[in-house]
Length: 276
Image (cartoon, rainbow, N blue to C red; front, side):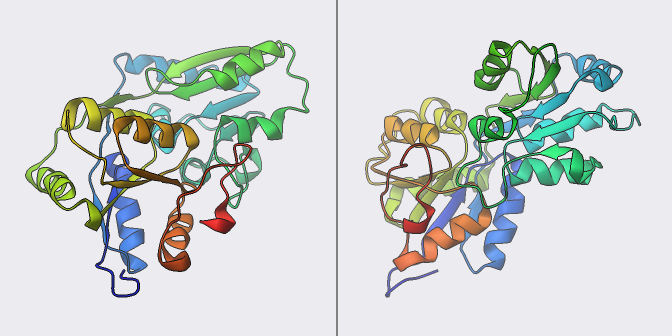
Protein backbone atom coordinates (compact mmCIF):
# COMPACT_ATOMS: atom_id res chain seq x y z
CA UNK A 1 0.00 0.00 0.00
CA UNK A 2 1.61 3.25 -1.09
CA UNK A 3 1.37 6.51 0.81
CA UNK A 4 2.01 9.89 -0.81
CA UNK A 5 3.67 8.38 -3.84
CA UNK A 6 6.03 6.22 -1.76
CA UNK A 7 6.77 2.75 -3.14
CA UNK A 8 4.74 -0.14 -1.79
CA UNK A 9 6.42 -1.68 1.22
CA UNK A 10 6.50 -5.47 1.46
CA UNK A 11 5.61 -6.81 4.90
CA UNK A 12 7.70 -9.84 5.89
CA UNK A 13 5.72 -11.98 8.33
CA UNK A 14 8.09 -14.13 10.39
CA UNK A 15 5.63 -16.20 12.45
CA UNK A 16 5.69 -20.03 12.33
CA UNK A 17 4.42 -21.45 9.03
CA UNK A 18 0.74 -21.95 9.89
CA UNK A 19 0.31 -18.58 11.58
CA UNK A 20 2.42 -16.80 8.95
CA UNK A 21 0.18 -18.13 6.17
CA UNK A 22 -2.95 -17.01 8.03
CA UNK A 23 -1.55 -13.54 8.64
CA UNK A 24 -0.44 -13.11 5.04
CA UNK A 25 -3.89 -14.09 3.79
CA UNK A 26 -5.55 -11.58 6.12
CA UNK A 27 -3.10 -8.79 5.25
CA UNK A 28 -3.49 -9.38 1.52
CA UNK A 29 -7.27 -9.14 1.95
CA UNK A 30 -6.71 -5.69 3.46
CA UNK A 31 -4.73 -4.58 0.42
CA UNK A 32 -1.30 -4.87 2.05
CA UNK A 33 1.60 -6.54 0.27
CA UNK A 34 2.61 -9.30 2.68
CA UNK A 35 4.90 -12.30 2.29
CA UNK A 36 5.60 -15.19 4.65
CA UNK A 37 9.16 -15.85 5.76
CA UNK A 38 8.80 -18.09 8.82
CA UNK A 39 11.80 -17.74 11.10
CA UNK A 40 10.60 -20.45 13.48
CA UNK A 41 9.50 -23.92 12.54
CA UNK A 42 7.34 -26.09 14.79
CA UNK A 43 8.00 -29.75 15.41
CA UNK A 44 6.73 -32.51 17.70
CA UNK A 45 8.13 -32.82 21.22
CA UNK A 46 10.89 -35.30 21.97
CA UNK A 47 8.51 -37.01 24.42
CA UNK A 48 5.07 -37.04 22.75
CA UNK A 49 3.65 -39.26 25.49
CA UNK A 50 3.98 -36.50 28.09
CA UNK A 51 1.18 -34.38 26.63
CA UNK A 52 -1.10 -37.41 26.33
CA UNK A 53 -0.42 -38.30 29.95
CA UNK A 54 -1.33 -34.78 31.05
CA UNK A 55 -4.82 -35.25 29.65
CA UNK A 56 -5.47 -38.11 32.09
CA UNK A 57 -5.06 -35.74 35.06
CA UNK A 58 -6.24 -32.49 33.51
CA UNK A 59 -9.26 -32.20 35.82
CA UNK A 60 -6.90 -31.84 38.78
CA UNK A 61 -5.71 -28.46 37.51
CA UNK A 62 -7.48 -25.20 38.29
CA UNK A 63 -5.83 -23.57 35.28
CA UNK A 64 -4.05 -24.78 32.16
CA UNK A 65 -2.06 -21.92 30.64
CA UNK A 66 -1.20 -22.06 26.94
CA UNK A 67 1.72 -19.96 25.74
CA UNK A 68 0.67 -19.86 22.08
CA UNK A 69 -1.72 -21.17 19.46
CA UNK A 70 0.88 -23.82 18.59
CA UNK A 71 0.76 -25.02 22.20
CA UNK A 72 -3.00 -25.42 21.83
CA UNK A 73 -2.81 -27.28 18.51
CA UNK A 74 -0.20 -29.78 19.65
CA UNK A 75 -1.64 -30.33 23.12
CA UNK A 76 -5.10 -31.06 21.77
CA UNK A 77 -3.63 -33.35 19.14
CA UNK A 78 -2.60 -35.56 22.06
CA UNK A 79 -6.07 -35.55 23.66
CA UNK A 80 -7.10 -38.85 22.05
CA UNK A 81 -10.76 -37.89 22.34
CA UNK A 82 -10.63 -36.75 25.97
CA UNK A 83 -13.04 -33.88 26.72
CA UNK A 84 -12.02 -30.61 28.30
CA UNK A 85 -12.74 -30.84 32.06
CA UNK A 86 -15.73 -28.77 33.15
CA UNK A 87 -13.94 -27.38 36.22
CA UNK A 88 -10.66 -26.41 34.53
CA UNK A 89 -10.00 -23.01 33.03
CA UNK A 90 -7.75 -22.39 30.03
CA UNK A 91 -5.39 -19.42 30.24
CA UNK A 92 -4.43 -17.48 27.12
CA UNK A 93 -2.25 -14.42 26.61
CA UNK A 94 -3.75 -13.23 23.33
CA UNK A 95 -6.41 -13.43 20.63
CA UNK A 96 -4.62 -16.02 18.49
CA UNK A 97 -4.31 -18.47 21.37
CA UNK A 98 -7.89 -17.80 22.46
CA UNK A 99 -9.17 -18.46 18.93
CA UNK A 100 -7.26 -21.75 18.86
CA UNK A 101 -8.83 -22.77 22.19
CA UNK A 102 -12.32 -22.01 20.93
CA UNK A 103 -11.64 -23.95 17.74
CA UNK A 104 -10.42 -26.87 19.86
CA UNK A 105 -13.74 -26.92 21.70
CA UNK A 106 -12.98 -25.18 24.99
CA UNK A 107 -16.15 -23.38 26.10
CA UNK A 108 -15.71 -19.60 25.96
CA UNK A 109 -16.72 -19.24 29.62
CA UNK A 110 -13.75 -21.46 30.59
CA UNK A 111 -11.18 -19.25 28.84
CA UNK A 112 -9.46 -16.47 30.76
CA UNK A 113 -7.56 -14.03 28.54
CA UNK A 114 -6.96 -10.31 28.03
CA UNK A 115 -9.67 -8.61 25.99
CA UNK A 116 -9.14 -8.50 22.23
CA UNK A 117 -8.54 -4.74 22.45
CA UNK A 118 -6.22 -4.94 25.47
CA UNK A 119 -3.11 -2.73 25.30
CA UNK A 120 -0.81 -5.76 25.66
CA UNK A 121 -0.85 -9.54 25.32
CA UNK A 122 1.58 -11.35 27.60
CA UNK A 123 1.85 -13.24 30.89
CA UNK A 124 1.60 -10.02 32.87
CA UNK A 125 -1.68 -9.14 31.17
CA UNK A 126 -3.08 -12.59 31.96
CA UNK A 127 -1.91 -12.38 35.56
CA UNK A 128 -3.76 -9.10 36.00
CA UNK A 129 -6.97 -11.12 35.55
CA UNK A 130 -5.90 -13.79 38.05
CA UNK A 131 -4.07 -11.85 40.74
CA UNK A 132 -7.08 -11.31 43.01
CA UNK A 133 -7.69 -15.04 43.43
CA UNK A 134 -6.39 -17.26 46.24
CA UNK A 135 -3.90 -19.62 44.59
CA UNK A 136 -2.71 -21.43 47.71
CA UNK A 137 -2.67 -25.18 47.09
CA UNK A 138 -4.14 -24.92 43.60
CA UNK A 139 -2.53 -26.68 40.65
CA UNK A 140 -1.58 -25.01 37.37
CA UNK A 141 -0.26 -26.61 34.19
CA UNK A 142 1.76 -24.58 31.67
CA UNK A 143 1.68 -25.96 28.12
CA UNK A 144 4.65 -24.69 26.12
CA UNK A 145 7.64 -25.51 23.94
CA UNK A 146 10.92 -26.84 25.28
CA UNK A 147 11.60 -23.63 27.15
CA UNK A 148 10.13 -20.21 27.72
CA UNK A 149 9.55 -17.45 30.23
CA UNK A 150 8.95 -18.63 33.78
CA UNK A 151 7.54 -15.32 35.03
CA UNK A 152 3.95 -16.49 35.44
CA UNK A 153 5.00 -19.80 36.98
CA UNK A 154 7.28 -18.03 39.45
CA UNK A 155 4.52 -15.56 40.30
CA UNK A 156 2.02 -18.35 40.94
CA UNK A 157 4.51 -20.31 43.03
CA UNK A 158 5.09 -17.19 45.12
CA UNK A 159 1.36 -17.37 45.85
CA UNK A 160 1.73 -21.02 46.96
CA UNK A 161 0.34 -22.59 43.79
CA UNK A 162 1.77 -25.85 42.44
CA UNK A 163 2.94 -25.33 38.86
CA UNK A 164 3.78 -28.09 36.39
CA UNK A 165 5.01 -27.88 32.81
CA UNK A 166 4.40 -30.04 29.78
CA UNK A 167 6.27 -29.72 26.48
CA UNK A 168 3.78 -29.94 23.63
CA UNK A 169 6.04 -28.94 20.73
CA UNK A 170 9.55 -27.83 19.76
CA UNK A 171 10.61 -24.58 18.15
CA UNK A 172 13.18 -25.19 15.43
CA UNK A 173 15.35 -23.20 13.06
CA UNK A 174 13.54 -23.38 9.71
CA UNK A 175 15.02 -24.63 6.46
CA UNK A 176 14.30 -21.86 3.97
CA UNK A 177 13.03 -22.77 0.52
CA UNK A 178 14.13 -20.94 -2.63
CA UNK A 179 11.26 -18.44 -2.41
CA UNK A 180 12.14 -17.57 1.18
CA UNK A 181 15.84 -17.26 0.35
CA UNK A 182 14.97 -14.89 -2.50
CA UNK A 183 12.83 -12.77 -0.17
CA UNK A 184 15.63 -12.66 2.40
CA UNK A 185 18.10 -11.53 -0.27
CA UNK A 186 15.69 -8.89 -1.58
CA UNK A 187 15.13 -7.50 1.91
CA UNK A 188 18.87 -6.97 2.29
CA UNK A 189 19.31 -5.49 -1.19
CA UNK A 190 16.34 -3.11 -0.84
CA UNK A 191 15.76 -2.47 2.88
CA UNK A 192 13.57 0.57 2.21
CA UNK A 193 11.03 -1.59 0.39
CA UNK A 194 10.68 -4.20 3.14
CA UNK A 195 9.24 -4.07 6.64
CA UNK A 196 9.91 -6.96 9.00
CA UNK A 197 7.18 -8.09 11.42
CA UNK A 198 8.53 -9.89 14.49
CA UNK A 199 6.46 -11.68 17.13
CA UNK A 200 9.29 -13.65 18.76
CA UNK A 201 12.74 -12.85 20.11
CA UNK A 202 13.77 -16.37 19.11
CA UNK A 203 12.84 -15.63 15.50
CA UNK A 204 15.11 -12.58 15.59
CA UNK A 205 17.87 -14.77 16.99
CA UNK A 206 17.47 -17.33 14.21
CA UNK A 207 17.75 -14.57 11.62
CA UNK A 208 20.79 -13.00 13.25
CA UNK A 209 22.76 -16.12 14.19
CA UNK A 210 21.81 -18.83 11.67
CA UNK A 211 19.93 -17.63 8.60
CA UNK A 212 21.79 -14.37 7.92
CA UNK A 213 24.83 -14.17 10.20
CA UNK A 214 26.77 -10.96 9.85
CA UNK A 215 24.06 -9.22 7.82
CA UNK A 216 23.80 -5.45 8.05
CA UNK A 217 20.29 -4.47 9.17
CA UNK A 218 21.10 -0.85 10.00
CA UNK A 219 18.94 0.45 7.12
CA UNK A 220 16.12 -2.00 7.82
CA UNK A 221 12.89 -1.37 9.69
CA UNK A 222 10.91 -3.73 11.89
CA UNK A 223 7.65 -3.91 13.79
CA UNK A 224 7.79 -5.86 17.05
CA UNK A 225 4.88 -7.15 19.09
CA UNK A 226 6.50 -6.68 22.50
CA UNK A 227 9.20 -4.45 24.01
CA UNK A 228 11.42 -7.50 24.64
CA UNK A 229 11.17 -8.46 20.96
CA UNK A 230 11.85 -4.87 19.94
CA UNK A 231 14.98 -4.89 22.09
CA UNK A 232 16.12 -8.12 20.39
CA UNK A 233 15.61 -6.55 16.96
CA UNK A 234 17.62 -3.49 17.96
CA UNK A 235 20.37 -5.74 19.33
CA UNK A 236 20.40 -7.57 16.00
CA UNK A 237 21.14 -4.24 14.34
CA UNK A 238 17.78 -3.10 12.95
CA UNK A 239 18.01 0.63 12.47
CA UNK A 240 14.36 1.40 13.22
CA UNK A 241 12.04 -0.64 15.41
CA UNK A 242 8.43 0.21 16.25
CA UNK A 243 6.01 -1.51 18.60
CA UNK A 244 2.60 -2.74 17.52
CA UNK A 245 0.11 -5.08 19.16
CA UNK A 246 0.21 -8.66 17.77
CA UNK A 247 -3.00 -8.57 15.75
CA UNK A 248 -3.63 -8.11 12.05
CA UNK A 249 -6.00 -5.23 12.80
CA UNK A 250 -3.42 -3.38 14.89
CA UNK A 251 -0.76 -3.88 12.24
CA UNK A 252 -3.03 -2.59 9.48
CA UNK A 253 -4.02 0.41 11.62
CA UNK A 254 -0.39 1.17 12.37
CA UNK A 255 0.49 1.18 8.69
CA UNK A 256 -2.43 3.37 7.69
CA UNK A 257 -2.01 6.00 10.40
CA UNK A 258 -0.36 9.08 8.94
CA UNK A 259 1.26 7.12 6.16
CA UNK A 260 2.92 4.47 8.27
CA UNK A 261 4.23 3.57 11.71
CA UNK A 262 6.14 6.08 13.80
CA UNK A 263 9.05 5.35 16.06
CA UNK A 264 7.62 5.10 19.56
CA UNK A 265 8.46 3.67 22.93
CA UNK A 266 6.14 1.70 25.19
CA UNK A 267 5.01 3.69 28.22
CA UNK A 268 4.73 1.75 31.48
CA UNK A 269 4.91 -1.47 29.49
CA UNK A 270 1.90 -0.54 27.35
CA UNK A 271 1.71 -0.07 23.61
CA UNK A 272 0.76 3.53 22.73
CA UNK A 273 -1.59 2.28 20.02
CA UNK A 274 -3.31 5.63 19.69
CA UNK A 275 -0.07 7.19 18.45
CA UNK A 276 1.18 4.44 16.14
